Image (spheres, rainbow, N blue to C red):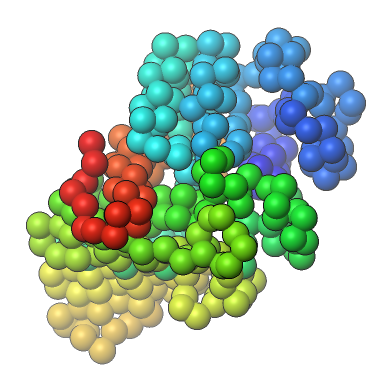
Length: 342
C-alpha cells in the first residue's frame, strides 16, 4: 500500500484524499510519510467513502477478504484497483468481478511485476516481436525475505515473532502464506506470456517453517499441451530482489521454439538466445515511459482514454492465474496431480 500511495501522491492529476484501516495505529507510518491531516484518516470505510467521494479506491486487505472489501466499495461506483493476489479462491475472484460489474466501476488487479521494465520488454520481444518463436515454457522464481521485512516505501524492518503472529500474512484463515502471496505472480504472468493458454494439470508441494501455520515455500509444475512450466515461491530469500538479487534469481525464463529469454526482477538487460546467436547476447532494457511507468499512471490513462489495461491487470488474465493457484492449493493438499479447476 505504501508504494501505491506514493505513486498517487506523485501523480500530477491525482489527489490522495484519504486512507482507511480498521486499526488506526497501522496508518501512522503512512500518515507521517504522506503528510495527511487527521480528517483524512478513517477507521470506517463507509465514512471514508462518504466524506471523500473518491473516483478510485486502492484496496490492499488480506487476500481472504478481497471479495468482501470489493463488495463494500463497489456500490459507491468507484473504480477499484486491488493489490495482488486477485483473491484467496476462484469463487471469491468471481464475486469481485460480479460486484464491480453491479457497481459500475472498473476492477483492476495490480501485479507489481508488470512495472518491472525487464518483464515488459520480455513480453515485447517474446510475444509481439516473436524473437524466440512461440513461447512453450515459462519458469519463474518469486519472493523476498518475507512480507513483514519491509514497510511503506520499502523501509527495511526486522519483524518479531509477535508481529508475525498478529499479521494476516501468517494466518491460514486470512489467506496467508507464500503460495497465495506469490504464486499468482508466476501463474498470471505466465498466462500473459503464453497468450492466455491454460494448463491441463497442476502439481504442487509446499514447505512450512515449524511453528508457522502457513507455507513459506511452494513449487508448482504446470502441464500444458506443449510442455511443462514451473512456478516457485519463497518467503525467506537471502536478500530482497530490489536490493540484491538472491540466488536463485527472482524473475522469469521464457523458452520458445526458436530461443530463450531470461528476465530478472529490476534487471537492466535481458539475456537472449536465438538460433543465429545460440551463445546468447545481452539486450539493454528500455525504460518504462509515461503513462505506463506504474499502476496509478496506467489506470488513470485507461480510465481517461479507454486505452486497454495491460494483460495481467485485467480480470480475464488474472482469473486464469487464480484457477492455476486454486489447483495448486488442491494439489498441495491431496499430494496428487490435479486437473485445472474451473
